[in-house]
Length: 83
Image (spheres, rainbow, N blue to C red):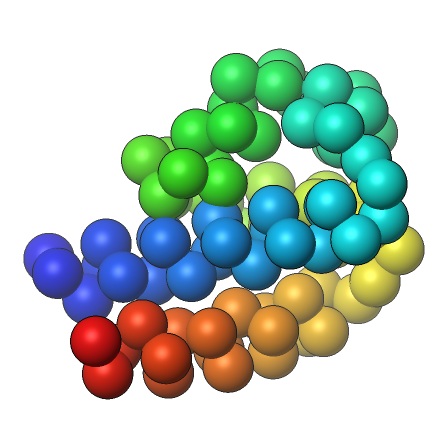
């Protein structure tokens, strides 16, 4: 379970960093993803385990491919795994 929690944290931190880099609020990203700002917040805090569909929508909404988002998460997950 701990590894999944670490992965959720890595996903959330990555999405938050990318969102902030693009000067988007949680509300703006949520609107682009056709979801709620609460859901984006929960993903960013590592509370929710996003589906592949959600990750695809987030990636596209951030102007990137899903594979690019996953690569970003993988590099951060390596850091989280070593904590």
